[in-house]
Figure (cartoon, helix red, strand yellow):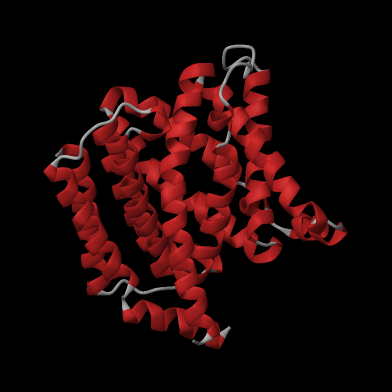
Length: 155
Length: 151
């Protein structure tokens, strides 16, 4: 059952991107991101109010950098809204995966953001290499580029 | 360069930037979660995000925006609910399956359903047929993820 839930989370991720992209088609990419965050905020606030969670939200003493995830999140959702509409969901998924894992590898290797440094293993380097080759193959797929151009021409 | 090509390559650029940003977002939010609690961190992330987005778009939030929003179906407004649901599912499965297995399954689901979405043009978005070349790229990317998490 847990395997199904983990797999289904991938479906949820795609659904979130697609519905946000559809909304941003009408209201704009950043305003679409605003709606996404405001709705999410209302849902989490409701969950906290009914008693899920620890009871208080205390951020005193937390370094400001750890509060900046929301700011970067707005930019990521806006980027997703733009990319999914103009190049499709697969291209966004593959590129985000590749560069998220490259960024994570750099953070681990150099110990950025207060992390304990973890040296890159050869299998991890090979995995990143395959991920990059896969992303390049998807991005340079001429059939997909022609399909995107065709969609715009016939719109 | 034609406008469409420019939009395509701009989409490639913002996707790369989003991936790099996301690697930082995941670490920052995870650290916040360990300090103040998972749900509380999700609340703070959405609160800060909403405030920041409001600051950026405030000059463009006229009555036209609210009219446009009112015309949209509830499904198009559900992205925020789905995102919160994903946090819950991740918190539920990661302790049982472990990060490597949970992330591998998540990525498999993401790539499969992204492909189905493009192939069928979900929500009247762009429709892109799955070519053999594209399938090869997706498979290589997935094997890369497996090596990174299991290697």
